[in-house]
View (cartoon, rainbow, N blue to C red):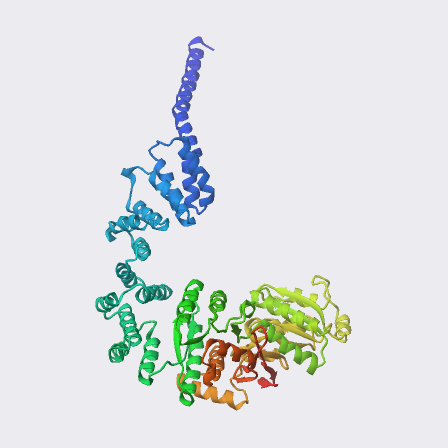
Amino acid sequence: MPDHRLRSIIVLKRTNLAALLLVFLAVLPGLRVCAATTDSPLKQALELYRSGAPDRAVPLFKAAIAQDPEAPETWRAHLALARIYHQKGRLADMLAELGAIPADRRTPETRLLEGFGLIGTGQHASGVELLRNLTENDLNGSQQQQRLTALTEGLVHLERPMEALFFIQQLLQQTIDPPQVSSLLQKAHELLKDRCSDAQLAEAAFLYQGTALGQDALLLQAWRHKQAGRTDQALLLVNSVLNTPIDFPFRNDADLLLQQLSHGGETPALGVILPLSGRFGHYGKMVLQGMQLALEQHNLQHAPVHFLVRDSAGDPDLTAQLVTELAASPQILGILGPLTGSAAKRAAHTAERLQLPLLTLSQQTGLPQIGSWIFRNSLTSELQVRTLVNYAMYQQNMTSFGILAPETRLGQDLSTAFADEVRARGGQIVAVQSYQPQATDFREQIKRLQGKQPNEPETTPEDAEAQAAEPPPFDALFIPDTPNRLALIAPQLPFYGLDDISLLGSANWDAPNLLPQAGPYIENAVFVSGFHRYSAYPFVKDFVDRYFERYGAEPSLLEAQGYDVAGIALSLLANPTAHSRANLRRDLTQMRHYPGVTGASSFTTTGDADKVLYLLQIRQGALVELN
């Protein structure tokens, strides 16, 4: 090869190598910068924080601050830590982080957080001053509500109720969430009643006329006039409240005051606490309609009793406040409700401490055991299985049972209670199987109920005929689920070899779609119910007729339970000697066989209802009442 060509190749290779080296050196700093950025504690912390992992982000934020406290972006770490500490309620730590943010990086959000922190740590005056200087234009909608809420709290602590009421009214104008509205009106009520002078009460009634808050102030003025003996002024104000069509939570109190002023004495009253808004609002209203029907019937035949109805919105804290408020009124002799479990538990503890009789409808475990002032009239799991097992073992001579239950809290509660009741009476639980709530194929569970392996080979026709001659492994199968699931389970029982078995059901079966969906497959099955609208009992028929006439619909279990709970308390208050809290408690303890539409009811020594429930059987596509 000629020398010049060789030299050209060598030069070219060197040139390419140099070019590659230059490209590598040019990229290398970028790679170093990229790697450093990727490994940056601040960047990693921000990514974790934004992805919803604040706890994992905290140590990285702290590492970023420690690495370079004066770095231009360190303020982001302080702000993120302040937000995290605010969410965790660590207000002193939040204030420390906010204090480390440079003045030129302070935003309306940081001032809002600082105001929260100051008020939350007892520095009310400083917090209120800081939040007052923030304007609505500085904040978004949710931040505006947070500011108003914090200002209200700070002003309450500073004993400045009129200013606090101003901000509550602003919140009410921005809020459409029913539970929040209920809570705000309750807070305003407490301020008006306990913190405002007569002059301030009159000022509030004037300033907020035409609103729920103004109506409450006007009513409280009327109460104070009555207490001072100024009956004419009280009548004038209470009539003004009742003649103004503005709804507010204490309108029933105005009716009660008018009755007292008209009759010249104290009218006995019962508090009613139910979730009339929020997630359980629909159910609470159904219960209340049954209660109101009972009250109307009572007041036609006896000296009037009044209900003071309060909306708990299903909130446990608000419920406890409502119990305390009602207990402060001497004419309140007891409370009916609540309906939901956590709210009922808080109500029970508060009522027991204040020695106020509470008659609840909740199925929450252990409520009556809280104390001697707590009673319950509800369709509990224990009550259902007691009625069902009593029928199966003592009337039908059954001794062995299987259980097929959904893996839900109620399904498992009923399953456990059924097994305990059977064993306590000397019976035998042969097999128990459970399934996911949304299951559609029950082959495995049904095979296991029979003591078989679900994956064993299919039987021949001869084997199937021989197995068909074998008796079922137990006398009856208990299925505590809804008609929708029952309609899937029942046809599969004989298909997979569980023939000629008696079926027992819980009150979950009692729904309008039971017969249309599952009827052909559950002939002769028996289930328990808390209310049977087609019962042969005359007093049940009378209740159904009067309810339909009053509300234009047939009642369900919820309305019937409300009717009975109110009826029990009202029947005892028909006797004037019961007109004290202690006497009402005594009479509830001694009550026997109240003829309720949800079953004849008594109370055990622990305060739980002991009642005769309905037993219903499917016969030829129709429901037949057994008892």
